[in-house]
Length: 589
Image 1 (cartoon, helix red, strand yellow):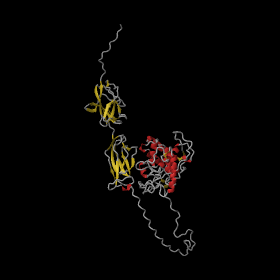
Image 2 (tube, helix red, strand yellow):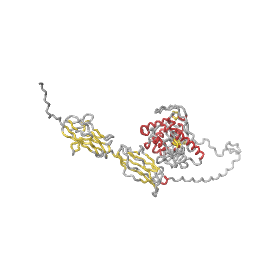
Image 3 (cartoon, one colour):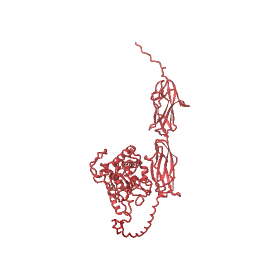
Image 4 (cartoon, one colour):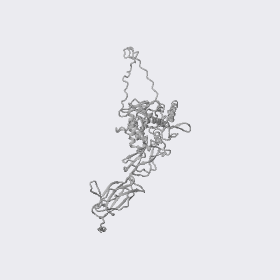
């Protein structure tokens, strides 16, 4: 849970704010590599003050509150050997991580090591964030599948001391159909989970209350934007994107350093739950999940007319005796009509009437290339006035594997002062075809704007041989040299371009020849057309060996590529030259 510390404390909590500020200052002083600024304050190494803006569109938690408890000053001992990752520490209780939760962190690290190796995500970072967000899911109160016992919820984000985020999930994740609340072990707000959610335990569902799903989603969230978490700048940017607070950054770095020095597995449900929260609270709000049974009503309701102690026959205690009946009770006064609560303040999102696509031309790129044109929209009121600070969600759909830069198919961007929101650069994958980018307002039912984009095949406009050696052969023999060509497109190397090679009848007849040189298949049979060829990363294409039949003459090999590049190569088959006179024989003197 994560609040923007110092700006989102609840009103009337002055005493708590002072105490929390002291904790934050201590956190900063303990941060690994902390250094003082010009005013003697502490900041984490590589971070700057004031805190830079987070990624456009907010962060994972909506800056909800988080636990501020610091790790013990004494690190776990002994520490694991360098690079082993083996949990060996058996010292401080804080070094213990519930077994299922620890397994989820490590499985997420392994998946990210495969899918995004350049990110270099350590599981200890997930542990550090999991510690401050939910106390490792409240000390490991999870079932065998990793799902929390009850929902873990942050406060409703109603603008009262916190960010104002109207409901985006109709209460599906947080049970609140008015405002959003952070949910689960890693405290995702529903609008972020909608695109960042992952299935970490392979059950076919993306559940923010499941520690495997939540840990994997957090890993992917931290690894977007091509951040390298082995560098200070990448690590700090990723953490600040989770919660845009210097205090949060320092606290997470403390726990990261602590877990890097050692940790160990403990039984589920036995973990230590933190006690202090950045908003002054002492624990998370919990609620049953929709599948949990409701609480039972009081099994012994009071009966009308009966006293607490029963009757004695004279009506003194309201019993069912034969004495004088109780007088008719007076009519209770009509309670006053409760005042109508004031309507929530209008947000920028409430002002949006429609989205307008801006500055986007034809979206076309070759496979593997970045799209030159961006996708952007402007949020406008009914009269066409621009609206700033509105979150716009861009979503890529279709049969291609195109994504935004960083590998994600969903990106959330806030409109600027001119009401403009521009999506991250689009990157074409290897699959060709059309796809769609949809821009929609987060938290409001406004018709979205669709953009159609096309991924075309890689192309070459020029083909040349890499050698000028004549290609000759005797009847029934094989050509000594293989044909190799280089493809370029607008002067640049054209790699992974599809090509076809055909032995044709003549320069004016491109049909396949039925005699002369040929390639051979696996059974040794002649083949005179090769399809499915492709240049390598350097634009080179080397054809298989060519073989001659008994026909002599000059033959043509034509190579064509996607994009229109064509090269015709000449092949000659001639009998060996026997016209030279033999050398005179030597005779004995």
